[in-house]
Length: 297
Image 1 (cartoon, helix red, strand yellow):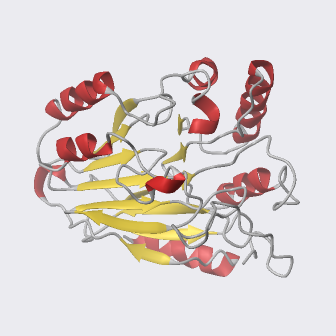
Image 2: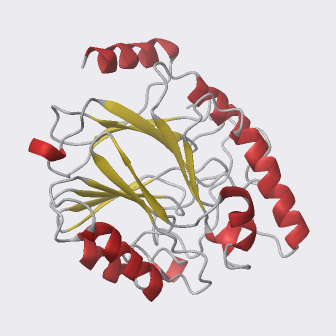
Image 3: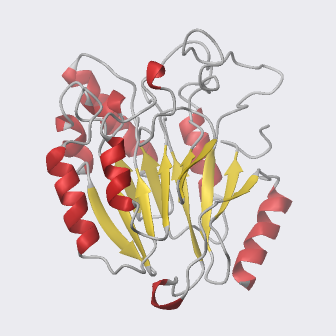
């Protein structure tokens, strides 16, 4: 694990210190363990095209986050962006322009292996048509160093459902994966009922969780709520990511789901990305949260 220790020392010296969180997911062993230690980066909710309060640097935070991720050493094995790449618009021409601009900015990442999924701002008005033109399928799976990763689309349906067809695909995908292989799921909305009054749920998320529950080692990473949140459904850990545009209030903490105000004394507070360590000798994923730029608080 020397390379992980070296990387953390680098991050400490670079002033990128963040909050670490150990997932409640138990460790794995045997044939399903990672072939070697690695880490990936989760980014989420850039809302490219958003303008105005509460973020006076709406066109700057995404490029700053790209620069911060490019400063990680060694670089992550891959990067995943968990939805709301762009801010919603009724104009299909403008939607595509925003997707195109976002893709150009993300193209500046030094890591070539980047995985995308839509958020409702990208896909709910056209069932993901424009997103697919620029980024491909809205749900898919891939394997990496002994782990199986699944991307679920719970936003292309305007009602916020995964849908029977995709649930059948999920069941078939799991059926082709050995029982002892750890499963990592990426979604935009939470699969559980975090706060349905604010659309912080997936209407048929319980069906997806039921399919995942027989697997011993499952972790879910999602976006949408613009803040850290850690939750367990049985043995399955769910981790929400910060956004790259503005933070939102804690579930139900105020009457309306309105962005938190910009703090001029602490710019970029509440914004950031995370890295996820998969450690062959550890008992859990190690999550570290970082601001959008070095030195931000």
